[in-house]
Length: 208
Image (cartoon, rainbow, N blue to C red; front, side, top):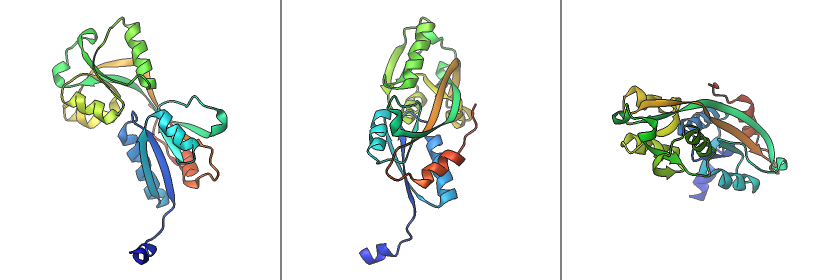
């Protein structure tokens, strides 16, 4: 078995951390880009921002996808890049099409999410006490609960465009000036991964 494994083609490797709340299609696009462009092996790990930053600070990640810049010592971060920005909309099952914001049930990110902080400020500005049916870290779980008709979720419309085309979800109301951002971060390492630096320079998604 060991002899067979020694015959395998070795690939350069990059380890990427993706925050739970990042739309999965963003991570999919990055992984596909690197596999095609660099013919490398990619390792994807998921977690909240603090977990990922701890891994990177311990030299266990080469690059992080997060929706906010880390509140950390600048000495631990080599480079940052705003990859994606888009206004959020509340979407939900078609049965909620005519619901008013103050009467809707909501599925929200957990309190440690920067998006949750923006949503709480929006609710406060609109004088709404939201009926929260669930708080979850994972973006895919939020969308799945919305598809099952349990409540409205705040997402980038581009992340659910297929579900909207299929009329499984509908836009209930947009959130003007409430944006989600996706950042790429390369932290300090003993040896910087050249694939991570290649991604920082060359991987882009059009900003909206």
